[in-house]
Image (cartoon, rainbow, N blue to C red):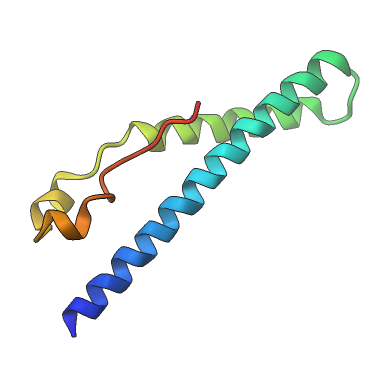
Length: 93
């Protein structure tokens, strides 16, 4: 029974990791698009707000990316086979 729960947790974490990666890729593309628009169309409305939101999102990205897996998590794992992908982080920017 606990094996099924563990498998569900691992599956959910892998799904979250995939969603996080997709969000980072979307953020990267949004950053490129915003740089283009701000350079070529400096009089767009709400440019300061857009730049501020993008800056916050990029800062959050850097904070998340820089955090290694916690020691507590690593000490509780039972098998490398079950957790081999959870400690990896991909860099896209």
